[in-house]
View 1 (cartoon, rainbow, N blue to C red):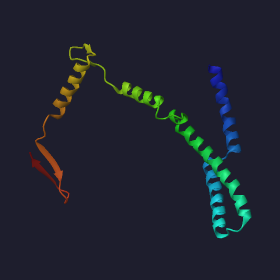
View 2 (view 1 turned 90 degrees about the vertical axis):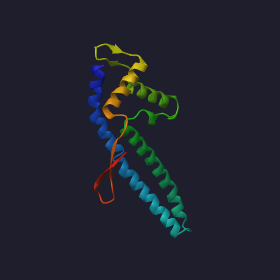
View 3 (view 1 turned 180 degrees about the horizontal axis):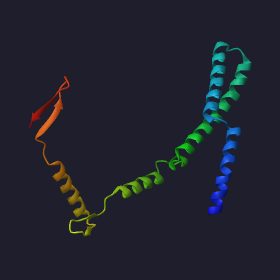
View 4 (view 1 turned 135 degrees about the horizontal axis):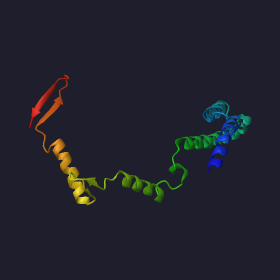
Length: 157
């Protein structure tokens, strides 16, 4: 395994160089081809009888489409997300990822004051509700609000 990762690391520089030589800056290439297509379309509007412009439009559109696909691929690779690579983003995979995240964020247990751990769901919920009620209180007696002049005033409830 170490050998493969070392070889891939050695290949990285060569692959980046090859990528720059073949594709260059994808964003610049896309913008350039898009500008060429826009120019051709403007000329077609000005000279609708010119058949040569229509012949230039089709390859320009194909080039823009190709660079759009490359740009999209570039952004997907840059995002380093797993789900854009899948066709069914709202399907089982996406739902499973949400469940996994929910499971990771869930608090399933806590350590009581006597040092013992409890995994009983109702006790865990009751503990956190009591803790935050003690911390925050159950009712608000004084509310600060700001009037339009910017000064604070207190409204007693």
